[in-house]
Length: 422
Image (cartoon, rainbow, N blue to C red; front, side, top):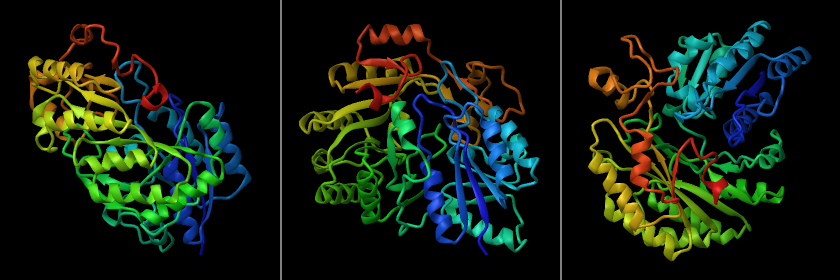
């Protein structure tokens, strides 16, 4: 028997606003299982609690699913903590005695901590489109023996065709310089010690279904896209096959993507260009201790800059510097390298947001000398739910190293993201 489910996007961050693609995918998956789904997007609501209360009083729902995209704004400068804003919404739902299921990338970062903080009933980590219907089946049978369910274990329905654009008003997002996203796969095999998505299960979607999803959106008048993958080039063959399929369909769109330094080949950049990819945001660490397990070095970075120039693709680098115990010489080497091998722009981050259950968090917990370089006093029972940052470099030192080169931007000081600035 189908359930009546309300999916809520409470994310009101608008720098830029992000279309809740995960909820759109979830609507498709739940409707495939004959559930009745309504999506409430509160991104632009001036009275989110009132709007939520209104819909709960107008219609009867069996469950409410609430996505948490981010715990906070992740940037040190002018940081915003989002979870406290969700408590009135949770209270509103609980007043109706409706079970609450949490999900989303932010929730997956620290599920137990967030579930306890918000006093919700259940949670799903990782992709929800397979595990959520399974959860609902168990819930209907009164056969639940846990509160948190692992979507990484079961992955995605790679054959699911997502014909999106009907449940969210994209025009509001585009007016605020948002962009229409799409996803080619889930998971990331990178070994970045500070990242909540490192070492998660990788599973690819069916390329023809991704292209059909894009074609459906193009037919609605949208022609500018950005990947929502952690990194597009997780698998080189898949990346090239996707580009070739996009070239063949010739949908009349342009797109941008996130990439890591490896794997790559010249053909990847050639086909990216031919498929109308105009911008790559490349994630780079200055610390060679992080470069090494992620299998890249300065030679790879040089080659990538050259290929982007050859194939007329703008390259924006997201650069992280100053990892614990990284030397100043290591940081200086990277900045000097980029001054010579010039991408289009470089966004520098030197404050590390610490997330529990990451190698960085474990490192901080064990080392009192590192604890002294946090922006807040460290306590033995710290769970890092509310934002805490590690920093061993001053803004003045960074500005000295940059030396007024306007290719470099300090993340959080210059507003916006790469695709807005190009």
